[in-house]
Amino acid sequence: MDKVVIIGGGYAGIYALRELVKSKNIKITLIDKHTFHNLQPEVYDLIANKSNIADVTVDLTTLCAGLNHPYLEYKNLKVRQIDHNTKKIFTEEKEIVEFDYLIMAAGTRTFFPTAISGLNNADDIKKLHRAMFFKQSFENELFKKIRDEAKQCADTHIVVVGAGLSGVEIAAEMAYNSRKFFKRGKFSCDNMKISIISSSDTILPGLTPELIRISHDRLKELGINVITNTKLQKCVDKYAFLSNGTKIHYSFLIFTGGVEASKITDELNVAKNKKGQIIVNEYMQTDKYENIFAIGDMAEIKNSAGEIMPPNVTIARISGTNAGKNILNIINKKKLIKCQPKLDGILIALGGQYAAGNIFNLFHVKGRLAYEIKKYVFTSYRAPLLKLIKTGYSKLRKI
Image 1: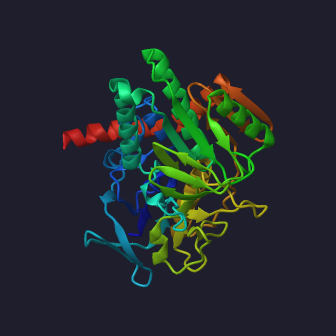
Image 2: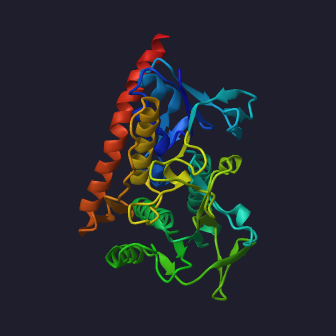
Image 3: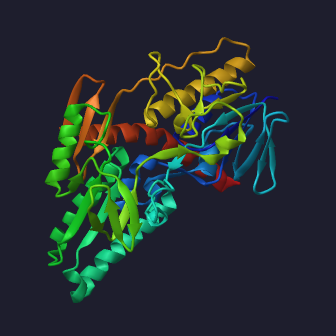
């Protein structure tokens, strides 16, 4: 029986898994160091108290049980070494997992440049446990302000470094919900400040001018200080020193300046880019091993025009599904299918029930309509998973 292993239970890994379970004649192993699938784009809602931990996670044990595959197992392990010659995966827990086909889907993590001193103390909200810590720290800071008269007049300043999608969304959500918090409580200490720093000459570099304009106007409306053409140079004693010669005192510093692939890509002697992402062909295979695939954020994926696709849920879905289909095709001696990644558009959450988007590169939407579209897209992904975990939960309760 062919053994297929997926490393990473994120968006791409889940899509690959949902394709692979269509065959009941293979053994499938999902490995992840976490016990849950993190719905990363929704973590900003968690921080902003629009959702709770159950809304942004999917239990992997329950999910696998709900897929009802006779030879599917989930293993909560940390991968430390991959040996292609012996087709074995070695883990921190000393368990060895064998494979015939391997899908690398462990995603990316926030890249912290070592050249910026003091950055190790910045908040990294890409990791769920760090996002939870930030949420608790921020709420504790607000409580101190309303409790302590001496602190009420002191500014609370959140500085977001990086004005890509993640930076803009978290800045907007924090600004909107902070304003809502002070207005609802009629607190006199309403002096929250939020700044977002972009090394580019604009926010959201690479997006359409109209989408940038809409988003910039919304940030300004929320009272966010937008600083462009500026880099963070160092952090010392709660001060951020900037390349424009100024320094900003901050209460919290959130760094979203870039990403790099999970370090387990180092275990494979295959082509990679500067971010550590595995360079794949049109079938999602690595350059040296036809039985090893890379998908989602962990891979450098190009469209038919040779353009590198941005890491997002749409590309995770397309690449994950394609890799799953191609492994089954190899096993069944069928022709491989070329991956044809393309973006349906982009939607950006901009605080409260307000979003902005570019749909199919045909038109732009903003406000409540864009928010409802974004909400629908997320629900379309989450609803089938909820059905599976409901089935899995009932199944596990009977054991």
